[in-house]
Amino acid sequence: MIATPEILDKGPLLIAGPIVSCRGIGFQNLEALRSHARSILSTVVQRIGKEDQYAIGFASVPQNKPLPLIDCNDGLDHFMLVGIEVPNLRNLPTGVVGMELPRSNYAVFTHRGSPVSMLEETIKPGYRWVRESTYELNGPYDVEHENADFLGRGLDPESKSYFWLPIRKKNEAA
Image (cartoon, rainbow, N blue to C red; front, side, top):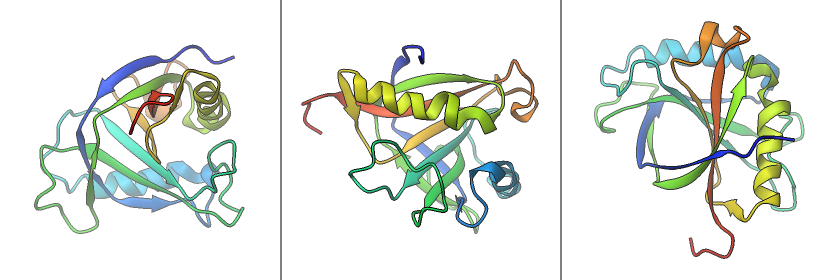
């Protein structure tokens, strides 16, 4: 059973970084994608916060699926913008795109340990929590947030990262 998340009112956030896809490499190789993204992010001069990094996930998942995409081999794709918060989206370097995450309430789940275990231990239970709660999703994305608590690139057993789901009360207008 996953712990009740913190409900956070956040945004808007301006995030800039490269878009990566797990197609062809799968979630088990996310560290390779993130390493590539970090090299591109080093070219972004303006940033807010030295430690914070965001992975904003977008999945092309049919409406009848009960959980988010969990396998890139099922004919669907999962894209992530691996980025950092910036003060504006002007003059971004080549290979970097920007997006504005809208202001929203977010259900924030704390993940402890390796990011490789996040799917089973935090992401799936987080989506299940939303489905069983008085909330519903408020956007077609999710956010993984790493900050100073993300120790040893997630390999330290005391490492923490945060999984955000945009939410709103059920039956609340969008």
